[in-house]
Image (cartoon, rainbow, N blue to C red; front, top):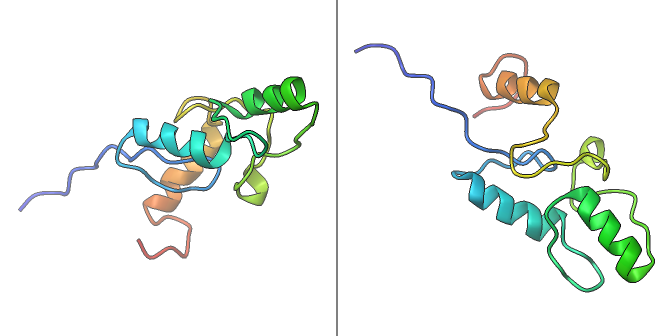
Length: 106
């Protein structure tokens, strides 16, 4: 019997809301899906890093993070793995995950 222990929440991608078993896998995902240069396919570590790379190397400006949700495409927010996510968004994600205030079935 007993209560279900509250598991530490899984790492998740701020840009697309996908969950991962490990933060290292999350970082690989971000580099491959959200921080990859569309011109030379170099994988960068952050949105601002990608923006600077494109400007300096290719003289091209990018204004949003590729493959991201519409409200999560800000290229200027520096997020690496789970670091840099706005605290309000972390709380909101926890609320939705725990079934308080969403139509999710998981």
